[in-house]
Image (tube, rainbow, N blue to C red; front, side, top):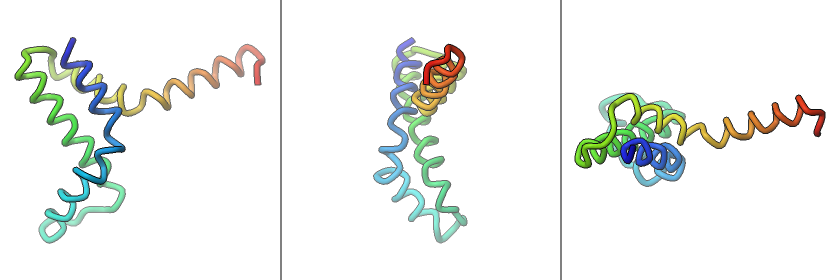
Length: 95
């Protein structure tokens, strides 16, 4: 369970990690592998999930499934909440 929580936090923090973590990695890769500008956030997400996976393994808490699910929920959680809220309000006639 702790691994899942760590992954949710890591997924949620991905946009904030894009500059300090994604930027230096992209700069290091530029001479060897072409990286599109919109892939910097993906690289930050991959690093965040790697950190969450290592922390989960060190704490002996969580499986790969729960780490991935936690990361996805952390990354898309606010958008899913807003979409659900909008759907609920439209369904009940509240605008």
